[in-house]
Image 1: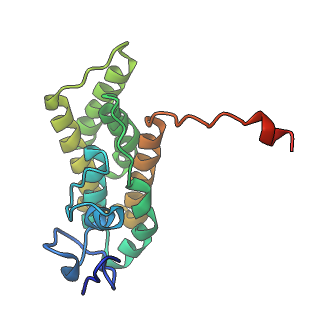
Image 2: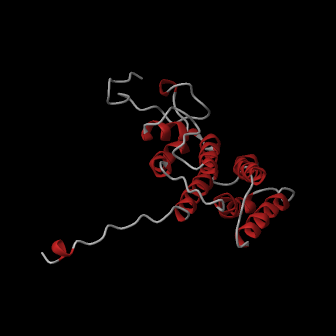
Amino acid sequence: MTPTSNNGPTVLPILSRGRHRHPGKGACFMEYASLLAGTTWSDQPDCTHPLLALIAREVNDETSNPGRAHLVPLIPSVIGLKPSDPRVSPALVACCVPLVVPVVSPLFRPTLTAAVRDAERLLTERETKTTAAYDAFAALALAGAIRAITDFRAPDADTLLRQVLTEAIAECRTWMPATPQPAENPTLASL
């Protein structure tokens, strides 16, 4: 890949598994997002909520090579999706993990359902103040659930992985602050 002077790369990287030193070697989902956002090349760019970025990286890595092409249209949707509400972490667990429970081993189900119960409990509290410890737990629960999709050989795993990512993106959108609408100009309204 050869960058041009001010216009960015002349060729976009191929979406692939794992971490890459530069776009010429390929890109994971979040590295691609960092490139499109114009930020520093990273699989953890500042333009996306860290837990959503983790979900995107895990889904990218667990998706088959042919299935990964279906993730490409989702990449722009994570750029700028960085809600600051502390309830985002339990909301992502409560949203994504239940999708995986039906396809995992009965021995692993209690672990995932306990993670969902904890997340739902936090979401019902009047003031949710998640801690770094909970955020680390949420990351482990989500990564474990996503990896379980392929570990337990879920039928149509790529579709389920894409669904987890799509629903995580939608959930994060619900936690974004509302953008104020510009006031209507009475002069223009009468035209």
